[in-house]
Length: 375
Image (cartoon, rainbow, N blue to C red; front, side, top):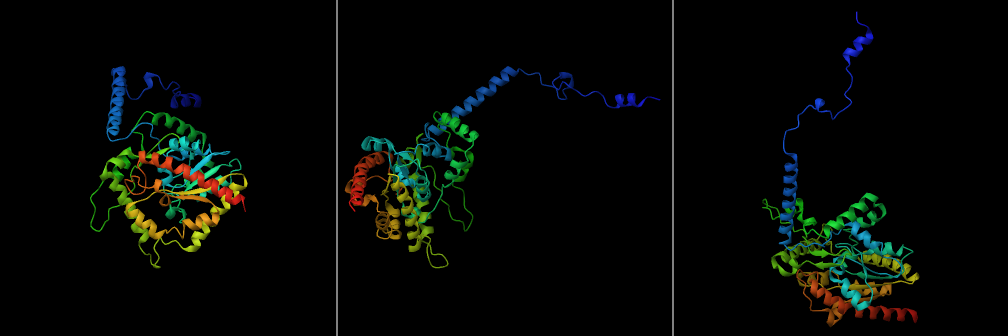
């Protein structure tokens, strides 16, 4: 009889230790010219990428147009220290304040921290809580956003606290690609193309108009209204339809009879008190805060003036926070600019607008400082 040792040796052969030994490969490798195959794949990738790039450049997309990511916002937030000038608010001050023109006329390049569709309240609080900041904050006021407290992009503040090393490395690498490739854009992704495509509607469905690409963005978040918005009336109409949807929603009565756009007085008071608390903190450190309302036109103007009359919102804001402010309707030199989709100024006009705005704004700031000091 075989011993238990010999039976064990026969039943369990020695394990394979060299997994790359050709004798132990279960599936044979085809005998192909692998160098040629690799070269063909590389050529195909380059050709397809080049074709995709050419296609999007032909559709007005450009290189050096950066995605408006939380990482890009955080990159600029790190510059908001000392006596820096910082811009916060929503898309009007974001797209309409030209940073080059601001620097030329005011002698300082502001840090752009505005975010589309977002109330500036939480961002003013963020600056007020930063002991390293004692600069000047210019708050762009879009009444419906500021006094409702709507926060479309608040996630950037969470990102600032949670950004990992790998996320930061990814951001820095992405910036290098975006400098050279126009197709790197949220709206060139297949899922975005499908999302914005005009699809047939079933009976009873209404067309939804999401806001498509509206601006280009420099690496320091200097934003400009995209040329297609200004030069293509049909494309601009997409944005007007988005605003129409928004206005229709805000003006439609709810079950309690109040429309979403009807902001109660107590809500207005609450927002102003929060703003004042944070303004006082910044002023206590030697900084200051001022407000600016940028132009709006068309159906948007009729809607905004109806639901957000200046006496109830703008005038109260300036009086109760003891702040300087510039309302475009009060100054002839801030009127007459081209707003292709009613809510934002075309890029070249935005440069002219900024050059006209900054002397007025800084004069109002100095006037208000002198007034406060004389009390």
